Image (tube, rainbow, N blue to C red; front, side):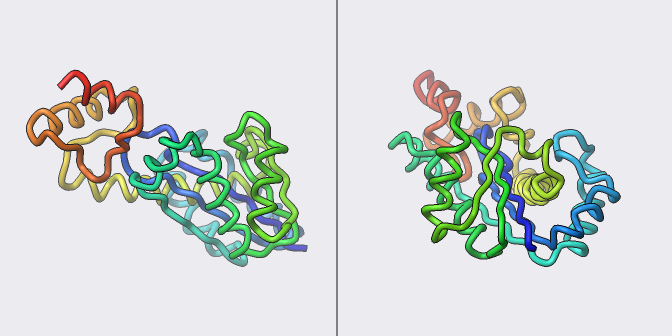
Length: 206
């Protein structure tokens, strides 16, 4: 029986992609992930995630990572359809990995509704949707590590050119970078999410 886990990374960020990752493996091999020390990516150091990323890829039968660019995020936010966008991409991962059951970390306040949406978009695959699935199910924890490491790599590439911090609104380096760039150029970089309220505030002020 093939089990799949799916999670995202970078949903709250002001810039860079929203990354969705999925892993699938035989149910009987789930304990291999547990014995590696796989847990929710937020509870691991950057170094630990990097080491586990390689080990997870070796253990699982298949994995799939998709990156949603800021322009797609902005288009969905304008229509108040960010959860739908995420469901659509999670459904792509579900269809690609084609497991018997897929566990997803729900970004919707109603996990059941979110799961139904993904199921409809993936030709009625069996979906189990929960809040905090990344800390409840090791297969989702594994997906959270792949998503986070992939997202961090995207930010690292941008950081080679710009001093932009982590990308999150709580990071003063990020806010300073976005403000300075906009003041100087009167446009936002393509990798910044213009629909985000903190970004809109910067644009309004300047």
